[in-house]
Image 1 (cartoon, rainbow, N blue to C red):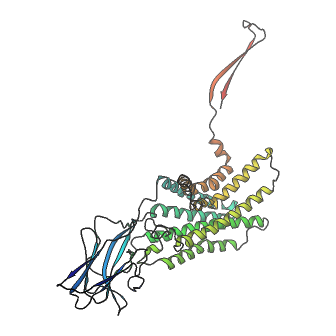
Image 2 (cartoon, rainbow, N blue to C red; image 1 turned 90 degrees about the vertical axis):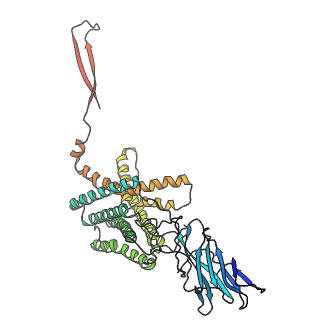
Image 3 (tube, one colour; image 1 turned 180 degrees about the vertical axis):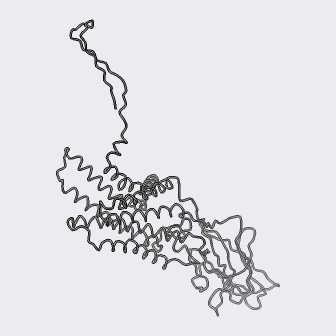
Length: 456
């Protein structure tokens, strides 16, 4: 701290350095980061001979933050807040924040700083994700068309559920491809200063950008359609559970209407609560992330926060749906295997059919997303990388799996001629010639010749 004098003097001057601002609770400056804010208290008498106080502070923040702007202030006891009257600010060649304030009796000086978060932008999509999503969109489109065309063979409820699953999942994949990357990036250039010339008290120690671009809209749509997909998955499982419990009467007549209301309405309620409680135009990062157009989950220290909507706006509802679907799968497997409790080698076909049926139900219920919760458990780096790849492949190709199990396989089963025409023709490889003689001598004229073709 540098002090400038206007003339010679022989007065005592006292300074106190507060390690924090607990005694100076401001209404205009509301900090949200864990940055340290020191306050310099100076006891300057009227005849001390001091015209102004000049002090400099080096911005001290971790590597995840950079200085955006600052203000030179002193504490007003009448207003009970920080004010900038009589203070000016500059920035020296070393990057220090320099303040110069006029003499104030028993004044408390401070530098209020606002920081930028150094976001690590990267592309969320790679060739595996793009390829899997594109193939899934094609597969889901064909599955929906096939289900509609053959709806008379199954009834209304299963077709309604499968078509809605295909529709919501298909829209989610398209939104993921075209909207997951944030088109507006706030990249801090370390070589260019953002310090303004005006000495204005910042609203917070975290510089916040107002909402720009379509990222928030994409986040809300992604949240809605992904939740809608799992809601319809769960409804599909509930419909199957009702069929197993009431095999004679079938699904209740009220179920399709309730399914439509829950399938499309429940996700809208969750998204509405998430937006209403966390989103503000001047602070969109309460709802979404900056790096990607997805729900916010981390605080400024890159640690998972239970206050963010990622937990209660997605993970908890999804967990409840996955638990329900897992219980339905167990019940389904129990019911279909109970009819043949004594499976043996002569009954391999029923066993394979039961396993395939359980696997098909698991795919339709979206149980591969359980691997996402496993990824949240601390583990070795190599195992985490392997699980991440498995999670990516399983979930980006879920539409392809549904197409194979719920469209292609039933189509080939109901049209065996098509499957038969796809079989490879038999191709002759070589000849074998056999000679049979009545006598033991080859010179005998009584012989028979046979030629066979070995084939695949």
